[in-house]
Image 1 (cartoon, helix red, strand yellow):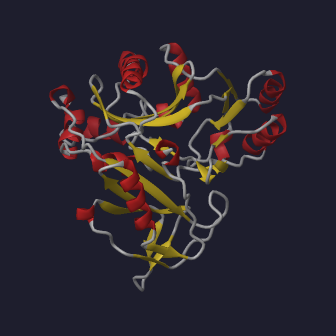
Image 2 (tube, rainbow, N blue to C red; image 1 turned 120 degrees about the vertical axis):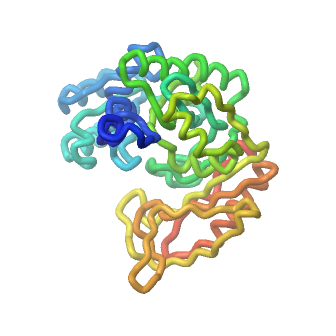
Length: 350
């Protein structure tokens, strides 16, 4: 976000950096910027308005006819998106973001957009600024509680590929969203180099963009990358060198599932420094553990140090097998107050 790619391009061009320029990073760094970009390039997304004035935003809530989602413009650790149930909750959320500055400067500007209904999916795509190659579609589980209850989080688990999107729909997404996004960024002078994460809602009126990230999304990457059989380093080098058109993605026929284990209290206040035990799974069994909010003390004791602490991932010949193995991986993790969803991928399995 701060422009390390620009720095190396200027001062040490022989050093390859897999990642977007500072200008391209605005696609994630500013919800306002990305929504205006989508409007400019006719990329399907929810109806929206941007606000920097609290009073004007509050008045808009009183006159808009559809249900809304309120998004802090800047980065807010995955918690800057609020989906209120009614106008009262919407006004409270707006006050928390813009008046009480719950997310600091990230809430100086907000996007108020139409609430979209449907299945949410995520697509991670490699790009060298011209060519785009996408990993299998994944489905994240954003809310903290089973059955999609409770507040939003940075993601409590995911699986891939999701059967909730068809081959024809994937082709539509590529044609109407992914390629126009890459082409639009190049046309505006900030071609995208790296991994573009596109969050989408599969609505009754077709796929629409919820958000962009300019990096490997978490926890989607933990499910998608174990399915990648191509050499990851070669793909990243091709993105940096502008030669991605010479590459093809080789993807496993298997499925993958990731279950995130969070600290008690997350996404609200939570304890840090809780001792934990983790048994190492066997990668040859298609089981992995990804550390996120963990640290080691001077005594070597593994401890929690974040909200989303650790994740268990597994691959399997079927989605059902991958899910069962991922939860076996969760059984290898132990710390006081740990919480995780028990229904990852259940929508697809049903």
